[in-house]
Amino acid sequence: MRARAKPSEARTARAAAGATYVALSGGVGGSKLSLGLSHILESRLTLIVNTGDDFEHLGLHVSPDIDTMLYTLAGLVNEETGWGRRDETWSFMHSIETLGGPGWFRLGDGDLAMHVERSRRLRAGETLNEICAHFRACLGVDADILPMSDDPVRTLVDTDKGTLAFQEYFVREQCRPRVHAIRFEGARNAHAQGSALRALQEPTLAGVIICPSNPYLSVDPILSVPGIVEALRACSAPVIAVSPIIGGKAVKGPTAKIMAELGLEANASTIATHYSGLIDGLVLDAKDAHQASALGVATRVTETLMQILDDKVALARECIAFCGELRLGSAKDRARIHDA
Ligand code: GDP
Image (cartoon, rainbow, N blue to C red; front, side, top):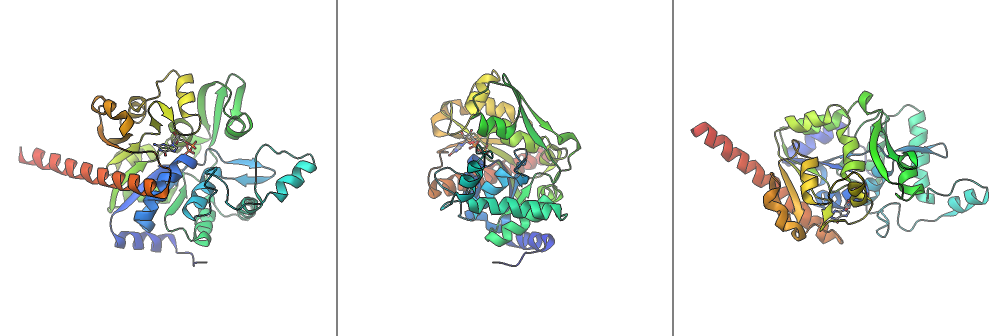
């Protein structure tokens, strides 16, 4: 177990180490690229993570995307599911079902400890961010993992079965209901995580990467927190996104289904439009290369399917190189304007 560094010490250490990067991420899809980035950048990476999926279950505060990120970066994740811990045991689930308790949301024994300890610390007055920093130190994760806000923001999905809380839609109903709209309750009054805003203002910032998470369910909640979009627009480094759509399909999860239900085509063009005004570049898969010239934004075409660690690190390298290219481009543009 490592000692917990004070946030200011951590920032100083990062700045001393060179160029810093920020990534925005949800859980399963986003954590794959985050793992690749963390292998290269270590403590120079700050992750701003969605907490719109957080909910109260069995009297406990569960933060699914934060925990997926912690487990993934700590090497503890269940590689088959992409969430939860590997080598997990299920005595608690078995016992609670025997007692007639809810079994639709699976909490493994090791995972349960996280929710019990997080809830205990919240009750004692710690913030989500302080707790996350503590867990990160306990699990030996170098990258900074920041909840997008310490205030409650809850993703609500308006469907043909009525309004569902995110986990009811995603886990209990297995994404079957037809989606009409997605809302982020509490977002308007939420405060963006201070250290996230500071990371976006660092003079060492060399790039911001929007991970290939679900844009509607995982990235939009982050963008809905006042101050985040403004900070992204104001930051001096390039902002890029990685398309979560490959050849018209989502790799996993309901992204393409939701796009169809919202009347959108599942392709890179829809992703570029979704993030327009925010991103300077889009990374898209080689399968979608034919779309690259028509997107109205700088593009980088590469293999984006991440199956093994090498794929994750390779895509992370592409993202970092693309940010470098865009920085150079804008420096050249500036020089040209200056010369003119
Ligand atoms: P989350 O949104 O990050 O919490 O994770 P999900 O598992 O819900 O997946 C969200 C998106 O990640 C989906 O649209 C997937 O297509 C995308 N995704 C998952 N794995 C990959 C991958 O290896 N490459 C790319 N490009 N997208 C991926």
